[in-house]
Amino acid sequence: MKTLIFNQEYPSAMKLYKDYYGKNPAQKWFLYGEGSQMGPHEVKTFENGSTFTVTWNGENIPFKSTVVGQHNVLNLTSCLIFLLSEGFKVSDVQKAADEIGMVKRRQEVRGKYKGMIVIDDFAHHPRAITVTMDAIRARFKNKKIITVFEPISATARSSIFQNEFRDSLAASEKVIIAKAEIATTALGGTDLDSDKLTKEIAQKNQAAVCVSKLDDLRKAIDAFAEPDAVLLILSNRTCLGLWESSFVQELKA
Image 1 (tube, helix red, strand yellow):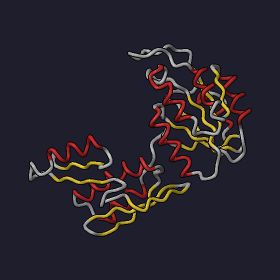
Image 2: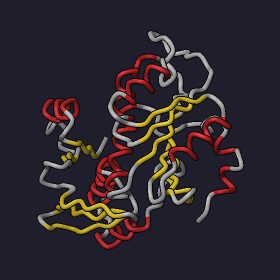
Image 3: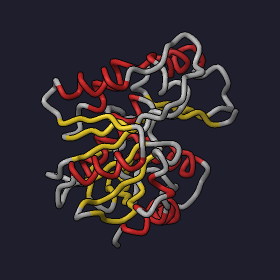
Image 4: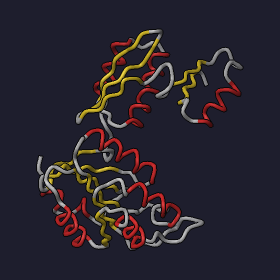
């Protein structure tokens, strides 16, 4: 391994860095992160992307990109550091960052529905939900977030993250739990209690409802709809068939 790039905010990464840094003279080591010398620094988020700087060879290099969210900027920064360490021209690295495309189902804007910006995202883990919601907040400032969450992966369908899902989803103004009637196969957990999850989110003064059929999901979305809000749909499948229904054809550019 020739080049090692560590986010210094992670204790486990820093333990490896302290244990092995300098033991192989042929290796190049770099530390990055919000509190690091390299950055990213001066991160600013807009509806269509982000700007930030990275310090390289004593120079603060400006970057702009379509990525949104601190976690995405950090991931991109590690790639930029690698490219710079391999000798790519700064201008070429800046161009690559500017032209990078987001992958499907990661904060993907699918259109508008009843005046709401519809975003499709693959997040199905509590931490992923939190950072995705933080990114949406930063990107669409002053807009309410109406979240549809389908707990469909083996761990998401289990009780393992019962409390964590409650806390992460409660950051949304309105929540619709799209419950798939499939038992969990995850070891060490019983089925997620979707009714309990919905009730506990509602106790945090957030509107919440649980549905298990596509027709009821469509009705819940219509009931919760607000012009100029964000409809964030979190699922790593079809969300009770929503993405295979007429809902897609009803989206407007």
